Length: 153
Image (cartoon, rainbow, N blue to C red; front, side):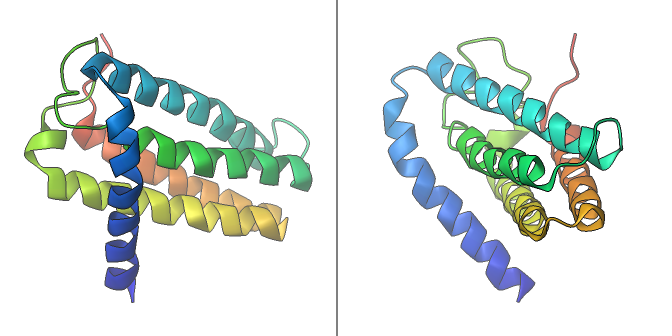
């Protein structure tokens, strides 16, 4: 079952990336696009983490709205890792993304799966479920960044 879901997520990602790849006329456009999507995703995920950690009051409706935005942005960022976008503008994306595309696609599938679990938790309105799922998203992001993102200078 997990392999089927993983395969379906990879196929879905590839299908959604075809139209997006056509929109980038230059590599730097793809780089800026994915960096913008990641920055926005980080901002909205930070709002979810703030509620999960008790730093701001928990609001189930606001949490669900933020999580839905995170899910959309998660898909958006990955369509911009097109061939040739490893150069053209400053980027922390490592060459391993393009050299180990199967491994990167597996990381994308894990990301999609963990974000979908967060979406389900967000729709439940249950803070404990959101906390658990948010932690899973954080771990998935970190695992991908550890392998595919160069450290900040």
